[in-house]
Image (tube, one colour):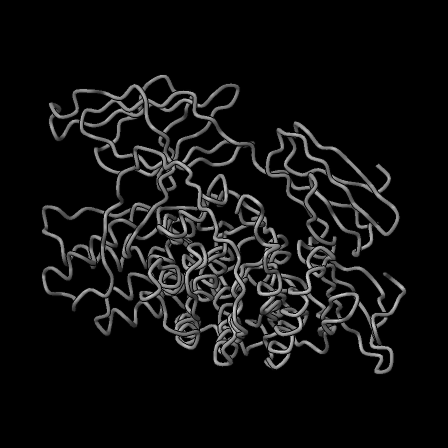
Length: 613
């Protein structure tokens, strides 16, 4: 197709391919304007019904004119041999590529991106158009920092091609709302749920709803089975965490009512830390150009701003608001002596003298919540604004996957609201969140993900044990590996230790850390006198990063184990191998040239894919 014309548009270069369409860079023959040409795959455009829906939806979406929505210039008619749409050409990268390049994003950057996406959604919803497929692959950040939401209504184009003969969804359901998972009626709040999933992923690098198969993912979405985002990222803004948690409520009545409300909440989150996105050094452009410098600058700014604003809240009697800011600051830097003194003062003011004790390091985080609750109880604070909760115990029985057959597609009346999800497969770049320092604050509802498997060899005389008797913990990793055992940022011991670890009865979140293996988090409920033993724990290898030689053209496409990932430009010349102990095949296609390499049993965290090697 390269070098040919589609009507008046010259096809210049292939720049990407997904499960729905192939994207080319093109040029308007008479206006000499650079454009993007998205051509639907033949198996999707072969249906006359699909072609008519394509034209109908394109006419609706063409009317959307907003700075944060990809503009559509033209589209093929229903009688054209190829189904395509012509859009503005965006010089930039998708959020997937940005996340691959920069890692999890700072809270303030997430709030900025979320506010721009909310503006796009608010405009579209006002025009009675739902997006239905909001995910990182469908959002681009232009080189000048402008956020562009793409592929409005694309889900409506795909009709029955979305459902296989067995009724299973094609593609990942990870960003669906519960209403979509149930195939129920949708409204604007369905897009807001997907926005919450997107923000969760941007700030943590971890999808909120996991599962070994699409059915289990959908079940977890419907039931709300996920960790709290603050559990994964204790350094994040508490106000952003509040926004994400509200967006991800399974009951749509408990979410924000509109995208306009989300904009207000995210702008308030930015104002809380005095980060003005209109300032050049806080703009999204500044982050895109140099994420590391931006993050360093932000951390220095927060070390001052959070302290001063927290002190101002204390002076106004807003103790809980102050504690939320102090908690974030201590997660960033636990050696903040002035903050430790301020919180210690609050704790001593509220606690009985004989029960007061120093608070040190990351252990302060639990005391912060306790101090806040106690201060309120004795009348030092007004009514609490958030709920103080305990960490629940583990789930003893793992949930079994359930089959969720989809209804057969039916013809629908003409409407501007898309009704089928997109088939594009989205691959998270991190299956496990990165290690974090310290424990997150427990000053908001906490729903940790049940990660511990059923235990073995546990003591049987728990009920008879005195309440003050410590619990004993033994953890063993399957050889040849071993791991250090952490809780709240401190080392409890090692899986190589012969003697058990003594712990106080109650809930414990322990993390096994090993150099070459992924961290394993375990949520344990220990009883007085219990001897908790877990043997043959399996650790998963850390993903291996493949750096692809810069000699390859940016337009070359990458295929991993039969799955098309995109262009090297989209991937920033990097590909992750999630299971390095298994065999993976990478195929790079540059026009007519194909380069193939197989990787297996990798040990090094980074390997190279060289053009001549």
